[in-house]
Image (cartoon, rainbow, N blue to C red; front, side, top):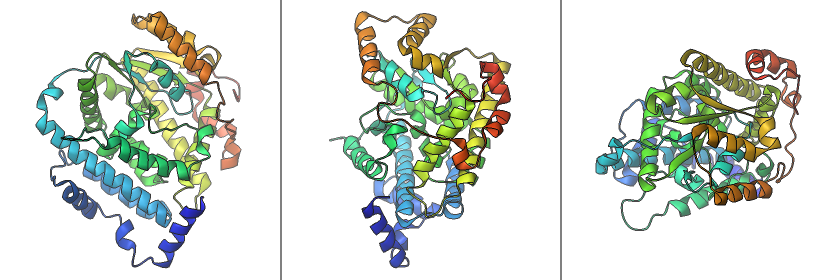
Length: 402
C-alpha cells in the first residue's frame, strides 16, 4: 500500500471518534446527504433500498475496512445514489428517449478472465460499434446545462484508483478514457457484483446472486437508451462477465441482442479471478481472509455458470461461443466469423483498424499475470469438480489449460 494511504489510515485510527462522520455508513444518512447535495428527492422505485441496506450491512460486518477503505466505499455509495437521483430526474425531463427501441446491441457475457476485455475493445475499433468509456459509465447522466464535468470527476476517481493499484495493469488494464464493462452502470440499482470488486462483501454477494433480476435489467436497458439517443446510428457494444447468469433477463428486455460468450478452462478462470479480487480487496482492508475470498469468488462463478447453462438449454438462446484459445491464436478470425454469422459488413478500414489494435496489444503486453489456485487455499481438483458439467459442454478435459 502506498505511503500516503498508510498515513491516512494512521490518522484515521488515531482520531477515530472525531473523524467518524466522514466514514459512517448509514443508509438513511447517505440517502439524505445525496438528496441534499443535488437538491433532488425522488429515488424512483424503492426496490434498490434492500440492496443498499444489505451492502452497508456487509461492509460494516464482513469487511475489516481501513479508514481509507471506508472513505472509498462511502464515496462509491454516494456516487451511486447521486447517479440514481439524476437518472430518475433525467427520465422525467426526457420521457421521449425511453419510448424508443435501442439498436440490437452486441453484449459479451463470458466469465471473467476469458478475454472479454480484449474482445470488447477489439470490436469497438469498428466506428459502427459504440463502446462505453469508463468516465461515462461511472457518471452516466449528462449535465442538465453548461459544462459537463463528468470527465474531470472521473479523472479524479481514476487517479485515486491508479495510485492505489499501480501493480494492476498486468491483471486488468483500466483507463478513464478507455472502454470498460457496463456492469458499472448497475451500481445505481444496488444489485451489482461490481461492489464485490471493491470490497469483501460476502453476505451481499450471496444476497445479490439470488435477488430477482428483472428490475435491475429494466433500469439497465433504460440507461442504455440514454447512450443510444446520443449516437442513434450506432450499435452499443458492451461487456460484463456478471451478465453470464442473466442472459434470460437480457433477452427478455432485448430479444435482438447479439450475445457473445467467451470460454476458458475453469482452473484458469478461477485462479486468475482470485488474484484479481485479492489485489482489489487488499487496498481497502486491514486483514483479508484469503480462503474465504476465494470461496466466495468460486461460489459466484459457479452460480452464474450453472444459471447460464440451464437458460441456454431451456430457452435455446442463440449465443456465439468463443474459446479463449481461439481468441489468443487468431482474434481477427474470431471477429470475422461473428460478423459473417450476424450478416454484418466490415470494410477495409475497419479490418485495418482491428488488425492494428491486435498488433498494438499482444498478450502479456503489461506483464505476465502469474497465479495459482493453491496460493489461495484451493486445489485445482476442487475447481474441476465444481465445473465438471461446464468442462464437458465446452470440451475442457485436461486438468489445466495454462
